[in-house]
Length: 123
Image (cartoon, rainbow, N blue to C red; front, side, top):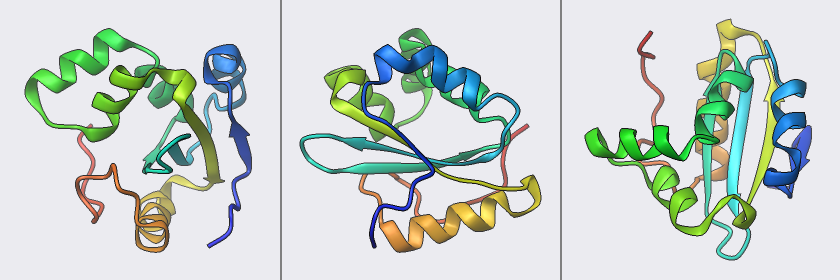
């Protein structure tokens, strides 16, 4: 499948503020891709800015790893943001968010996702 992202950020550290500003109050699907290996992670969020801001907090990622396994969190902490590309694949309504995330999981087969089926979100 060819790249059909809406927005692609190749310098995440430089564009952090822009990423958060441009995705405030938008729901959608995002993908992290390691520049060298091409391995990727697909995720979705009701508020992309809030979700992506979580990724920008090494302390939050480390705290999460204390209670659950996450290949993407571990990889971001190990390699650093400069080794990843962040893409917004699609903006969509909250009502179809999980359906669209499942579509991308099925078609792109991301290696960093542990679960390949979406589930009910914790609030």
